[in-house]
Length: 312
Image 1 (tube, rainbow, N blue to C red):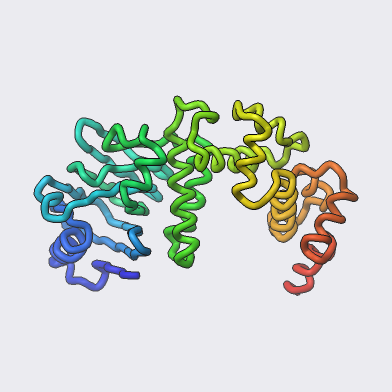
Image 2 (image 1 turned 180 degrees about the horizontal axis):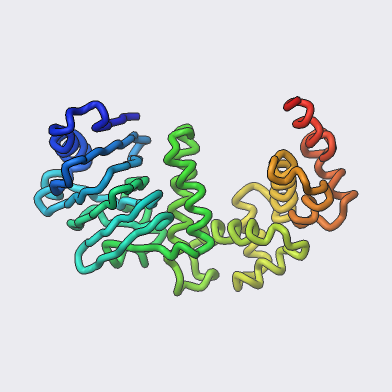
């Protein structure tokens, strides 16, 4: 993991430091001169063919020209998440303003201009083209894509992405999380494609996201899910079979995990165990208690009390 900052650089030399070391050597871009009090910080690291970075600046614009592309070919896509401030991005004949929590995907083969606001802070993941092309050909038809921030897939992808760029994940987790983020963003862009026509991998991601969103619903069943996706119950069971689990086993374990987490959540101290169980989709407390003990080796009350004892 590499970290560069202008904090320790003489004020007059900050932008030249940033231009030569960060922009040209690391990202092969050509920055425009900012205002006098420029400052910037960036953390970047690699994992196999993936590149990650978080970048914080107080306002400037960078350009990737045809000359930059010819000197450092970029057969990749960059996935950005705006964490704070705003980015104004122009690429080919498209122009977007990206606000906090917006996801956008840029084609590395095309020139662009990106202007960051004074409090600009964004995270990015550079992925090989194949990771987007085969999942989401609908995203490949335009060089710059802004994804609907209200999509349930984007909300879940955002949580995964923030964890991913924290750097607090091992190489295997990095690969799995990146795959998952790409699947979710592909789904977010598939607004005109029926769920039953998605590739099996994307359909499985959509199924899991749907089930997690409806975890609280006691009537969450194979029939209910299959009908919402326009697939047969047999196909649904085949999809869950790729996880090495049945639908029923996955649902029970996911609900138990949600209850276990909620019982240790300080923000839910005022809720009873039964309220938490019902909110996670259980409608039989006896069954819930038995299943919880079988899974975790203690009752829900013992699990919650153990935290109280440890914090005294």
